[in-house]
Image (cartoon, rainbow, N blue to C red; front, side):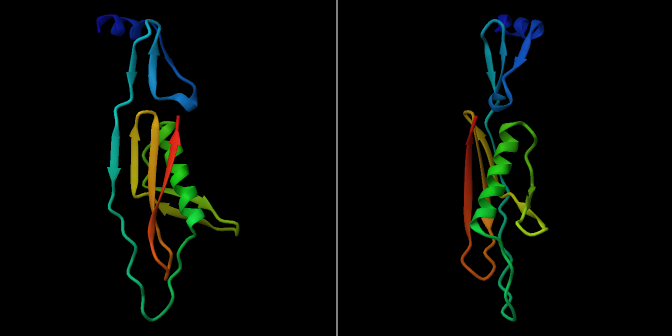
Length: 128
């Protein structure tokens, strides 16, 4: 292991942005990013019986999950929310429920708020 530490001191080169999973030292030793998982336990507000609620589409939930997974993969943080631009001039802040990093794969989940319709969780896996 001391050979790896010496190599780290001499040269440490980060892989390309898509492969930022480990530092590669000149000696060939690899120190992978440790696995990590965050589950926030988000839920959808209860339905208001006096009127209809607004929600967002499955595509919006999938876009938010994929964006959050890319942020984790590229080491840009572990976001609580991500902004998604809608086709109309409006940006939604979508809460991220699940974030996971393991074996060069980032996985994120969004609780889909479907308004008055059924709710589910949409996941996105991004491979580095």
